[in-house]
Length: 505
Image (tube, rainbow, N blue to C red; front, side, top):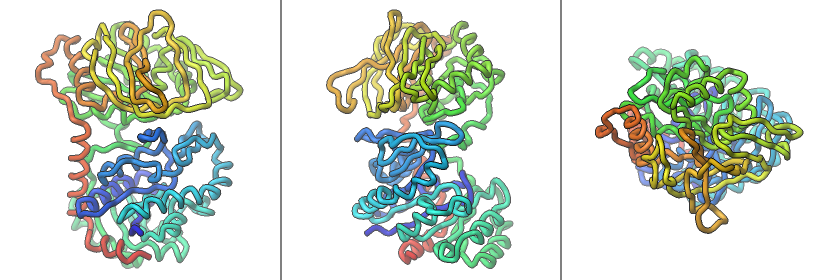
């Protein structure tokens, strides 16, 4: 049986995912077989495994830190919000259906057998399991039949490290207040406190740490600094959206749709010299980018209507007509067509259809069955602005609920292979003039793809592209996990954490 330790937080975005990843890398470096686990994840960023199953990207990131292949066993329940009061419920990588928050709250206890089946399989295979909670364990209105925080800690018999975010202020109230709101048996499970995202002179905190330990009766096992580590974010709380909007020599603008998903598709551009990647929410922020990206979305039709009502569509069309490259991925690709039809009511209650942006002659029909598969392939022979991509190899995954048919005048963007349940190649995506689209998430992850895009833009602008270099994104992420582990070793009491791990509850 594996030993277990659980990271819980005082709130969302306290740093649970990153700390869990750091512990996974430390345990791996120390010679242990380690796996991450989060019983229930709510996020719009998801991933498709080799088996064609869907899971949250946070556990994919943690699996990478642990040096193992991602598996849905690490995230048996994934909730993908479809609106403010409901989500698509995914169990063991398969869509169970859409549920309102109230209906899911009443139903979720039925999923405990699925959670424990997944956990026990990991328990048999690994030495250590690093569990992650969700939100806060002190949400007193949600504690009944909890399956992701203290309820999961009890099922796994996992000691808990409670993390507070000092960067937002009030960290002592966060930690002590959370502990006070726990039941007595739950308090006993909290074996260590971590102050996260600290900036400045740690000695200033010393008196506060002493008082925190005295009032809570729980040792502080570390004060982790605010880390500038670049790994994949889980959801829309990402700080990427709030970064400086300064324009670089080559400027790429990603439209920040209300239900944006899988925005990690564009991370490779962040690390390229001379390139700015900006997330744009208002038409006034668009400026004059060299390429506009329409990203994936959990609700293509509603986000297309938002583009239309907000004035963003008009601003995009104006820039495209002036020669700006426009690239759509998944839902963003679907928006580029002539029509989007939903006869089965997948996105529109009662069904219906809407007019697309009309930039590529194609039509999309939504269906209840979701396409989920990993793919490899090559870009077709592409004339025009992105001709540099022609023949370039790519890889990624498809995850969508629509089927797109091309009309005369549109040509496929890529030829894909390696898709589950099919043999040979299939056409994917489309291009028409300076407008491009694909269903493939992760399409820019390969160094040669991102470099080809930036080189093509540079040549279009008459820039010297000889100095442009790509980034081996996989190698870059490995270096970030090592930096994360090194920082946590320095600022956490790993001897005490190992003692907590080995003692259990």
